[in-house]
Image (cartoon, rainbow over all chains, first blue to last red; front, top):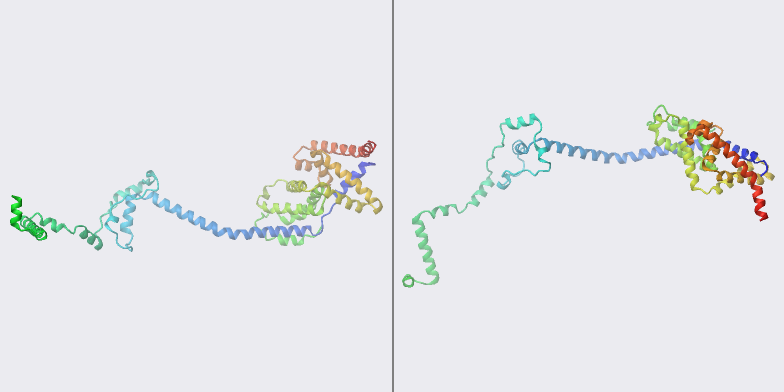
Length: 187
Length: 191
């Protein structure tokens, strides 16, 4: 190639003097505005999801903290006494003292602060007093012990002899045997 | 340079941008320089403009970290340079260089000599692409008049002396190859 330096210089000058089109600036600004709008339109969709997840996390944290710091026996006291009884009365089986299901380690259930320990020991209702039976519970008790009176009468000899004679009589009537035959058979 | 009166109005609502960095002013100041840098790699006006647009979109995405940028000019040039190189890898070089050579020759030469000049430009561009990568990059960045040696060194993360040496070697190698080109062709025909 003849005079390569001149050709190289011409080429580099062509690169050097290149000018952008007149609308480039506005195109760039429009693209930036559009990019900005895209960012903003994406935000409101995320906000409710973030708010809901934060609320759930907060509720779980509060629940865990509450159940961690109150001892199990104190928790039963608060549920039996302090909470008004709006629910239907419980049965005897439900009222039996039951170990609450432990979801956290035992070490975490223990009161850690001195104030909580003193409150638990000095509280007038500690441990929780027994509640009087409800009408349904009393009915259930009566049904469970229905034959108690009959059992007591068995201890009386006269009544027991009468019942025995009555049973023998019923037996003879049923099988058609008189008393003489029975006696001869027994001899 | 195009008027950018509307730019500051359009970008005034970008309230997240720190007050120290005016994005509209950045577009106004650097878009032409970034265009030339991208054009030196891509040799296509539309592709270069797209690269400049991508640069400022990235600036917008990282607008909160702009105050931490020490040298805004070099930072922007490096983004444009890397984006242009990425785009160049996805294109066939001959495809862009042919059009560029024709348009450059027709702009600078009369019609009767433009064809021959375009052929010479194509040869130079082909030889530039055959240069070692470091030499090619230094040569292309040196074509942008606004960049001095220190800035080229900062963009390429090399020392200034290394940039000067690479530029000298690139020019010498390119000249040598272009001078040998007719001889090689004649040798090829003789065989």
